[in-house]
Length: 199
Image 1 (cartoon, helix red, strand yellow):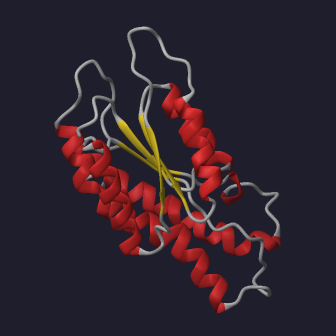
Image 2 (image 1 turned 90 degrees about the vertical axis):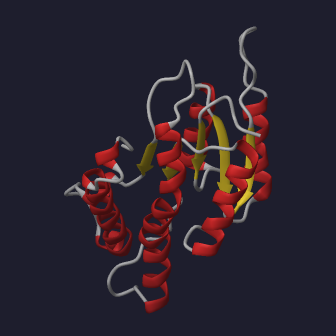
């Protein structure tokens, strides 16, 4: 069934910053896809909080679903999108919040930790943006009545990429977030994303 509200998908939204983003977007009137990696109970709690949000007499409550997926895995990213479209019929906003966060210096880094960090913080967002693009473009060209704003793709970085106070054990995490910032900059200039109004 097609949603009569804009729909936001927030990766890594069972806790922390992602949870806060999901709740705020629901308060702003969007239906929410709560994506989680492993903590189903925490994701369901976010869904329940969204269902319990106060509403006005003229407004239906926001809807939310929880979907397990690790977007570092392309097939799981496809599954996440498929469940989103099957439930809501559209996708207007993607918030790429899920992240690998362990503090490792260059001396602590292993090939495994390098691959985990870059797959989660860089590969996952890059490929998920690519997979989500057709749905965002469709929503951009078919806006809902009485709504403002077009399609959005939002990445979440860290101030550690620019602060002079950064420590050596932030090496691997900052390397991935710096890469993600460049992904964001170039998508903004890409004619099929920023150039077509998906900002």
